Length: 570
Image 1: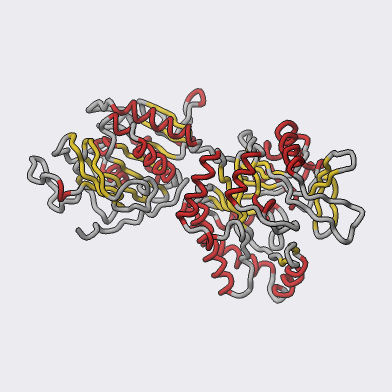
Image 2: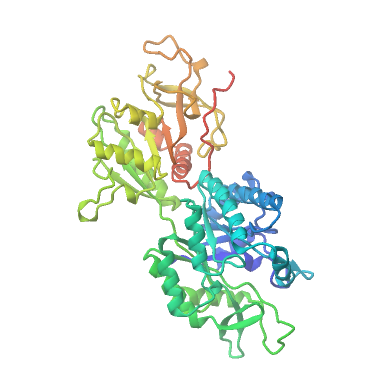
């Protein structure tokens, strides 16, 4: 199980003390042995006003360097306000948070339906004032009317999340949501693959073992993120007791239900992962001077981390749980025509990149048996097991009509990714729908292998940011037919002004020689990359970085605009 540090622990909000900046939080998470972090989406940590794209990438790079994942961002949104303009402002805020989440490389954004908000006195936060205001503002309106406002806002935000490759995780947080049944109802009504669930045991009205396990079974695979929170006090003997306070009332020892909560996560999936987070540091309440609560010291934090690793099923501290979306890439290397020596190098490179970055697992096939949605013998993986398929192929592959239909549905209907590598453009030349999905077909390579002058057209797209605007590369560049910029977004092209257009076989009168492009196909993402004929191309660090980001984009791990656009003025 993986465990991560929730940044609210060091937000400077629930204790007397300064906030820990996010770069220092990453260092702290590594020091204590955590696998990653979750960033609270408000100042001073995660307000998108403070996090433009370049700064997000810097933080992501810092986290990567420390071996720390950014598991999620937590929104503090309220879709329940009776004033339409306020709800629209919340949607704008959410759209920017979604952008920030994608820029950070985080797969998940925790969301509320409604939230009271907090106030500070002068530094410590409290819900008291906001909680009193919420029922006054909403008193004239029925629950179903408020529910409808929240649903419409969430539908719009789920659309933005889908475009950005981000999953929204709806938390069972009051005041509009009362229990997991409400969460399930909202997810069903929104009906979006980009909306999942964040089920938190401490927020459940009934936290008995039976109730927790029942909720876990009913939520099932929709669960993608969860938190476990509470307070800690150090007893005179030096032992640590965990408890939680809700609406000002101490509700008991967290050890009594923490074990059931952990087990419930395993009910959801044997692959459930947990992210570990210590409790937010606490203060000594004025109304209970006999209960001494200590701000967690550095030594205690290390002790808690050790106990969680060694005895997590015993429930020693609070935690944030996440069901990891384990991405898988299927690479097909079947050749029915020219045998490219670089296919083996390409497969090994994609495997190594995925493994080193912890972004995906790579599976190789030199046949097409896995290109189907039908169950396969001996539990072999079919298309349903993968997030993207890459073809480094040529000719008419060994696929029957049902397999062809399943491949198109995998991308178009399931919203998965398809990557065409180099000679994928010489594949299925007599199957028009494949060419339509890919975006074009091979029409010769008039220059053979040569020092190709290349131009980056979209430096903001994943895989393009680190490349110079113009560069040369020794490789074989294809001429493409049945291709139109009305259908694709060109990312890299041949500089037609620097090549011999009088060469035999040059047929594009518009002088438009696209090399890499991206497009949407139904709900899915398609990327064609014409580079990679030569083995040494795959060994270049800049090309490997390009492939890392492009595969992640195809799997919705990174955002990138694939809207078609005309050729730039030359």
